[in-house]
Amino acid sequence: MDHQDIRTLKILEAIDENQGQSQRDLAGKLNVSLGLVNSFIKRLARKGYFKITTIPGNRIKYILTPGGLAEKTRLSCEYIHFSFEFYQRARQQFRKLFQDLTDMGVSDIVLYGANDYAEIACITLQETKLNLKAVVDDDKTGRMFLGNAILDSSQLAASVTYDRIVVPVAEQREAVLQSLIDKGILREKIVLLD
Image (tube, rainbow, N blue to C red; front, side, top):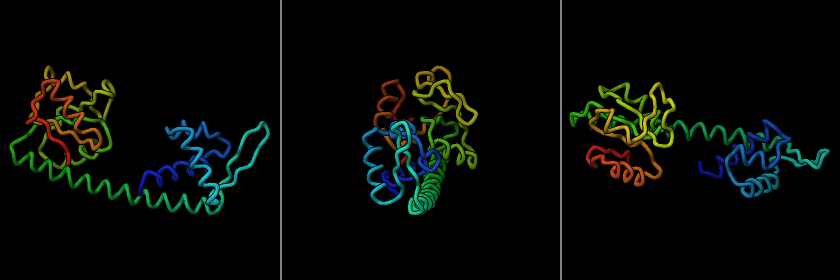
């Protein structure tokens, strides 16, 4: 499933939920540009997934067609399958990583990044003897993540004892790595998820 399919699904879901919302409303809800929503709307309308009608007050209403409902259902099933496979692959990667760390004598870890990967890592950690000492995310400091207060990486040296920092982020991993090194964390203490 690619980004275009995911955006199509989100637009069809949003239209099904509220047929009278504007393209600007859709762009805000989906966190994409107005121009991108406009091009998707035109493409999906040409495919016959919904009808566009005008309502009083110069507003537009989108009505999902049976073809649009069928496409939404198809994409929803594909998304569920994609998500399940993603979860299974991530669990396998974390099992292997955590077993490798255990074999190296590591006992205390920190997770860097409060995201979907970190959630899967926390679930997988419960099957190991490793101890989660902290969750760190410089963009989410002070919030809670699965019962853990999220720390800023600058707090690590002063308040947390750990053997390794596991970075379960796929995007910007090199930038995260460099940021941690710049804060004085030794490279050999940082483990990047493949």
